[in-house]
Length: 186
Length: 104
Image: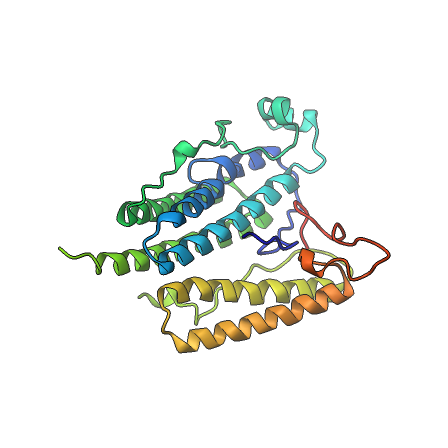
Protein backbone atom coordinates (compact mmCIF):
# COMPACT_ATOMS: atom_id res chain seq x y z
CA UNK A 1 0.00 0.00 0.00
CA UNK A 2 1.37 3.42 -0.80
CA UNK A 3 0.83 6.44 1.39
CA UNK A 4 1.66 9.93 0.19
CA UNK A 5 3.10 12.59 2.43
CA UNK A 6 2.81 16.20 1.26
CA UNK A 7 6.52 17.05 1.23
CA UNK A 8 9.72 15.99 -0.46
CA UNK A 9 12.33 13.88 1.35
CA UNK A 10 14.68 16.91 1.42
CA UNK A 11 14.00 20.61 0.69
CA UNK A 12 14.10 21.52 -2.99
CA UNK A 13 14.52 25.25 -3.57
CA UNK A 14 16.02 26.10 -6.94
CA UNK A 15 16.39 29.86 -7.36
CA UNK A 16 17.43 29.96 -11.02
CA UNK A 17 15.53 29.09 -14.18
CA UNK A 18 17.39 26.97 -16.74
CA UNK A 19 15.57 24.78 -19.26
CA UNK A 20 18.88 23.48 -20.55
CA UNK A 21 19.96 22.17 -17.15
CA UNK A 22 16.42 20.83 -16.65
CA UNK A 23 16.89 18.76 -19.81
CA UNK A 24 20.08 17.26 -18.40
CA UNK A 25 18.49 16.47 -15.03
CA UNK A 26 15.55 14.84 -16.85
CA UNK A 27 17.70 11.76 -17.47
CA UNK A 28 17.34 10.96 -13.76
CA UNK A 29 13.57 11.17 -14.24
CA UNK A 30 12.92 9.05 -17.35
CA UNK A 31 16.37 7.87 -18.36
CA UNK A 32 17.90 4.37 -18.29
CA UNK A 33 19.60 4.81 -14.91
CA UNK A 34 17.13 7.22 -13.39
CA UNK A 35 14.77 7.09 -10.44
CA UNK A 36 11.73 5.81 -12.37
CA UNK A 37 13.75 2.85 -13.64
CA UNK A 38 15.09 2.19 -10.15
CA UNK A 39 11.73 2.36 -8.40
CA UNK A 40 9.94 0.23 -11.01
CA UNK A 41 12.76 -2.32 -11.01
CA UNK A 42 12.80 -2.79 -7.23
CA UNK A 43 9.04 -2.61 -6.76
CA UNK A 44 8.64 -5.28 -9.44
CA UNK A 45 11.44 -7.57 -8.22
CA UNK A 46 10.13 -7.50 -4.67
CA UNK A 47 7.23 -9.85 -5.51
CA UNK A 48 9.61 -12.75 -6.11
CA UNK A 49 12.22 -12.12 -3.43
CA UNK A 50 12.68 -15.43 -1.57
CA UNK A 51 11.99 -14.15 1.96
CA UNK A 52 10.65 -11.21 3.93
CA UNK A 53 14.09 -9.68 4.38
CA UNK A 54 14.44 -9.36 0.62
CA UNK A 55 10.85 -8.19 0.20
CA UNK A 56 11.30 -5.54 2.89
CA UNK A 57 14.56 -4.21 1.47
CA UNK A 58 13.36 -4.12 -2.14
CA UNK A 59 10.09 -2.46 -1.13
CA UNK A 60 11.79 0.11 1.11
CA UNK A 61 14.49 1.06 -1.40
CA UNK A 62 11.92 1.09 -4.24
CA UNK A 63 9.72 3.42 -2.23
CA UNK A 64 12.63 5.73 -1.50
CA UNK A 65 13.41 5.83 -5.24
CA UNK A 66 9.83 7.03 -5.85
CA UNK A 67 10.55 9.83 -3.37
CA UNK A 68 13.69 10.62 -5.36
CA UNK A 69 11.67 10.60 -8.60
CA UNK A 70 9.52 13.26 -6.98
CA UNK A 71 12.60 15.29 -6.06
CA UNK A 72 13.96 15.11 -9.62
CA UNK A 73 10.56 16.09 -10.99
CA UNK A 74 10.51 19.03 -8.59
CA UNK A 75 14.00 20.17 -9.63
CA UNK A 76 13.03 19.99 -13.31
CA UNK A 77 9.70 21.68 -12.58
CA UNK A 78 11.34 24.52 -10.66
CA UNK A 79 14.07 25.04 -13.30
CA UNK A 80 11.33 25.53 -15.92
CA UNK A 81 8.69 27.18 -13.76
CA UNK A 82 7.00 29.95 -15.75
CA UNK A 83 9.37 29.53 -18.67
CA UNK A 84 7.81 29.74 -22.13
CA UNK A 85 8.61 28.96 -25.75
CA UNK A 86 11.18 31.71 -26.20
CA UNK A 87 13.14 30.66 -23.14
CA UNK A 88 13.15 26.99 -24.15
CA UNK A 89 14.20 27.94 -27.67
CA UNK A 90 17.02 30.17 -26.40
CA UNK A 91 18.35 27.26 -24.32
CA UNK A 92 18.12 24.92 -27.31
CA UNK A 93 15.17 22.96 -25.88
CA UNK A 94 12.55 23.89 -28.51
CA UNK A 95 12.36 20.19 -29.43
CA UNK A 96 11.11 19.36 -25.94
CA UNK A 97 8.85 22.39 -25.68
CA UNK A 98 6.90 21.62 -28.85
CA UNK A 99 5.66 18.27 -27.44
CA UNK A 100 5.57 19.02 -23.71
CA UNK A 101 5.70 22.80 -23.10
CA UNK A 102 7.28 23.07 -19.65
CA UNK A 103 5.71 19.83 -18.41
CA UNK A 104 7.77 17.16 -16.68
CA UNK A 105 7.77 14.16 -19.01
CA UNK A 106 9.52 10.81 -18.47
CA UNK A 107 12.28 10.86 -21.06
CA UNK A 108 16.05 11.12 -20.94
CA UNK A 109 18.18 14.17 -21.76
CA UNK A 110 18.29 13.14 -25.45
CA UNK A 111 14.47 12.92 -25.58
CA UNK A 112 14.20 9.11 -25.59
CA UNK A 113 10.98 8.21 -23.74
CA UNK A 114 11.11 5.89 -20.73
CA UNK A 115 10.77 2.17 -21.38
CA UNK A 116 10.53 -0.91 -19.17
CA UNK A 117 13.34 -2.29 -21.37
CA UNK A 118 15.60 -0.43 -18.95
CA UNK A 119 14.77 -2.91 -16.20
CA UNK A 120 14.60 -6.63 -15.54
CA UNK A 121 12.83 -8.76 -12.96
CA UNK A 122 14.05 -12.33 -13.20
CA UNK A 123 12.76 -14.03 -10.01
CA UNK A 124 16.34 -15.21 -9.53
CA UNK A 125 17.58 -13.42 -6.42
CA UNK A 126 21.24 -13.49 -7.49
CA UNK A 127 20.48 -12.14 -10.97
CA UNK A 128 18.07 -9.52 -9.62
CA UNK A 129 20.41 -8.24 -6.90
CA UNK A 130 23.40 -8.17 -9.28
CA UNK A 131 21.30 -6.03 -11.64
CA UNK A 132 20.42 -3.75 -8.73
CA UNK A 133 24.07 -3.34 -7.72
CA UNK A 134 24.87 -2.30 -11.29
CA UNK A 135 21.85 0.00 -11.39
CA UNK A 136 22.97 1.86 -8.26
CA UNK A 137 26.46 2.35 -9.70
CA UNK A 138 25.04 3.58 -13.01
CA UNK A 139 22.80 6.00 -11.16
CA UNK A 140 25.76 7.21 -9.10
CA UNK A 141 27.83 7.67 -12.26
CA UNK A 142 24.97 9.63 -13.85
CA UNK A 143 24.91 11.96 -10.84
CA UNK A 144 28.69 12.34 -11.27
CA UNK A 145 28.06 13.45 -14.86
CA UNK A 146 25.32 15.88 -13.82
CA UNK A 147 27.67 17.43 -11.25
CA UNK A 148 30.29 17.86 -14.01
CA UNK A 149 27.73 19.57 -16.27
CA UNK A 150 25.98 21.78 -13.73
CA UNK A 151 27.25 24.87 -11.93
CA UNK A 152 23.98 25.67 -10.17
CA UNK A 153 24.65 25.42 -6.42
CA UNK A 154 21.01 24.76 -5.44
CA UNK A 155 20.74 21.94 -7.98
CA UNK A 156 24.14 20.50 -7.08
CA UNK A 157 23.28 20.27 -3.40
CA UNK A 158 20.27 18.10 -4.25
CA UNK A 159 22.29 15.99 -6.71
CA UNK A 160 25.00 15.33 -4.11
CA UNK A 161 22.40 14.09 -1.62
CA UNK A 162 20.78 11.77 -4.18
CA UNK A 163 24.20 10.51 -5.26
CA UNK A 164 25.09 9.58 -1.72
CA UNK A 165 21.82 7.67 -1.34
CA UNK A 166 22.73 5.53 -4.37
CA UNK A 167 25.95 4.57 -2.60
CA UNK A 168 24.04 3.53 0.53
CA UNK A 169 21.54 1.53 -1.56
CA UNK A 170 24.46 -0.23 -3.23
CA UNK A 171 25.82 -1.17 0.19
CA UNK A 172 22.46 -2.58 1.35
CA UNK A 173 21.98 -4.65 -1.83
CA UNK A 174 25.50 -6.00 -1.31
CA UNK A 175 24.56 -7.10 2.20
CA UNK A 176 21.41 -8.81 0.89
CA UNK A 177 23.46 -10.58 -1.77
CA UNK A 178 25.97 -11.80 0.85
CA UNK A 179 23.08 -13.11 2.88
CA UNK A 180 21.52 -15.02 -0.03
CA UNK A 181 24.80 -16.34 -1.38
CA UNK A 182 25.76 -17.76 1.99
CA UNK A 183 22.47 -19.72 2.04
CA UNK A 184 23.02 -21.48 -1.29
CA UNK A 185 23.97 -25.15 -0.92
CA UNK A 186 26.61 -26.19 -3.45
CA UNK B 1 31.44 -3.15 6.76
CA UNK B 2 32.97 0.24 6.04
CA UNK B 3 32.23 2.73 8.82
CA UNK B 4 30.64 5.39 6.67
CA UNK B 5 27.85 2.98 5.68
CA UNK B 6 26.76 2.69 9.32
CA UNK B 7 23.76 4.90 10.06
CA UNK B 8 24.93 5.28 13.66
CA UNK B 9 26.88 8.08 11.98
CA UNK B 10 24.07 10.23 10.65
CA UNK B 11 23.96 11.40 7.05
CA UNK B 12 22.71 14.98 6.88
CA UNK B 13 20.11 16.72 4.78
CA UNK B 14 21.28 19.77 2.79
CA UNK B 15 20.56 23.22 4.21
CA UNK B 16 17.45 24.89 2.94
CA UNK B 17 17.90 28.17 1.05
CA UNK B 18 14.20 28.95 1.36
CA UNK B 19 13.42 32.56 2.33
CA UNK B 20 10.03 31.83 3.86
CA UNK B 21 8.94 34.39 6.50
CA UNK B 22 7.63 31.89 8.98
CA UNK B 23 10.74 30.52 10.68
CA UNK B 24 8.83 27.95 12.71
CA UNK B 25 7.18 26.53 9.57
CA UNK B 26 10.47 25.78 7.83
CA UNK B 27 12.11 24.79 11.15
CA UNK B 28 9.36 22.26 11.86
CA UNK B 29 9.41 20.94 8.30
CA UNK B 30 13.16 20.53 8.51
CA UNK B 31 12.79 18.66 11.83
CA UNK B 32 10.23 16.35 10.19
CA UNK B 33 12.54 15.71 7.25
CA UNK B 34 15.57 15.03 9.43
CA UNK B 35 13.79 12.67 11.84
CA UNK B 36 12.10 10.75 9.04
CA UNK B 37 15.28 10.55 6.98
CA UNK B 38 17.22 9.19 9.94
CA UNK B 39 14.46 6.60 10.45
CA UNK B 40 14.53 5.72 6.75
CA UNK B 41 18.30 5.21 6.77
CA UNK B 42 18.06 3.07 9.92
CA UNK B 43 15.19 1.08 8.39
CA UNK B 44 17.28 0.05 5.38
CA UNK B 45 20.19 -0.84 7.66
CA UNK B 46 17.97 -2.86 10.02
CA UNK B 47 16.50 -4.81 7.11
CA UNK B 48 19.95 -6.36 6.65
CA UNK B 49 21.04 -6.13 10.34
CA UNK B 50 17.92 -7.17 12.22
CA UNK B 51 19.77 -7.94 15.46
CA UNK B 52 21.28 -4.48 16.04
CA UNK B 53 19.49 -3.52 19.26
CA UNK B 54 21.01 -0.08 19.46
CA UNK B 55 19.83 0.69 15.92
CA UNK B 56 16.30 -0.46 16.78
CA UNK B 57 16.29 1.87 19.77
CA UNK B 58 17.51 4.76 17.63
CA UNK B 59 14.83 3.95 15.06
CA UNK B 60 12.11 4.12 17.73
CA UNK B 61 13.41 7.49 18.91
CA UNK B 62 13.54 8.86 15.37
CA UNK B 63 9.96 7.76 14.68
CA UNK B 64 8.78 9.30 17.93
CA UNK B 65 10.48 12.59 17.02
CA UNK B 66 9.05 12.47 13.51
CA UNK B 67 5.48 11.89 14.75
CA UNK B 68 5.72 14.75 17.26
CA UNK B 69 7.08 17.24 14.71
CA UNK B 70 4.52 16.15 12.12
CA UNK B 71 1.65 16.60 14.59
CA UNK B 72 2.96 20.03 15.61
CA UNK B 73 3.28 21.10 11.99
CA UNK B 74 -0.21 19.89 11.08
CA UNK B 75 -1.68 21.60 14.13
CA UNK B 76 -0.38 25.00 12.94
CA UNK B 77 -0.23 24.76 9.18
CA UNK B 78 -1.76 22.06 6.92
CA UNK B 79 -2.27 18.29 6.76
CA UNK B 80 0.73 16.34 5.50
CA UNK B 81 -1.07 13.01 5.20
CA UNK B 82 -4.68 12.55 4.16
CA UNK B 83 -5.62 10.91 7.45
CA UNK B 84 -4.80 14.20 9.17
CA UNK B 85 -7.17 16.10 6.89
CA UNK B 86 -10.79 16.90 7.59
CA UNK B 87 -10.40 17.90 11.23
CA UNK B 88 -12.55 20.94 10.54
CA UNK B 89 -16.07 20.31 9.22
CA UNK B 90 -16.25 23.76 7.63
CA UNK B 91 -13.71 23.25 4.92
CA UNK B 92 -11.92 20.32 3.25
CA UNK B 93 -8.28 21.12 3.91
CA UNK B 94 -6.35 18.31 2.22
CA UNK B 95 -5.49 20.41 -0.88
CA UNK B 96 -3.94 23.13 1.34
CA UNK B 97 -0.26 23.77 1.62
CA UNK B 98 2.74 23.40 -0.63
CA UNK B 99 2.69 20.72 -3.34
CA UNK B 100 5.46 19.66 -5.76
CA UNK B 101 7.20 21.06 -7.66
CA UNK B 102 7.26 23.66 -4.89
CA UNK B 103 8.86 22.65 -1.63
CA UNK B 104 9.15 24.09 1.84
